[in-house]
Image (cartoon, rainbow, N blue to C red; front, side, top):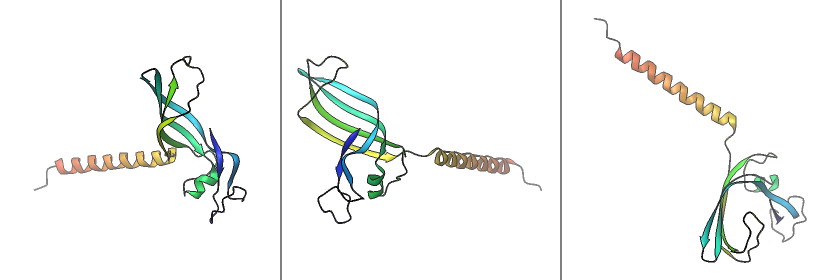
Length: 142
C-alpha cells in the first residue's frame, strides 16, 4: 500500500484539505506484488519489483482521466532498485536508506466483457474466412 497526500485542486493551492484533494494518510495505491527479483551485489542485494496488480484511489484516477470506479483493477510494473544489507535474514524485514533508481506504470486491466467481445469478433472473422474459402473452392456451373 502506498499512502500520502496529494493536492488535486484545479488551481493547486499547496494544501491537501480541499474536497477534491487526497488528505494526509490517504491510500493512493494498494495491491499485490506478483513477482520480485533479488540479485546479489557485492556484500548486499539489489531488489527489483517487477509486476503487480492494484487499485487506485478514485480521486487520483479521475484526476488523470482513468477509469475510477471503486475497486477497478489495474496491472502495473514497478522497478525500484535499492540495496539491502547482507545480514538481512531470508524472508525477513529490511530497511534501506538509499534508492539507486526507480520507475513505474499502471494501466487499466481489460474487463472480462471486453475480452469476450474481442473473442467473438475473432471467431466471427474465422467463420467468414472459412466460408469464403469453401465458396472459392466450388467449381463454377457451365
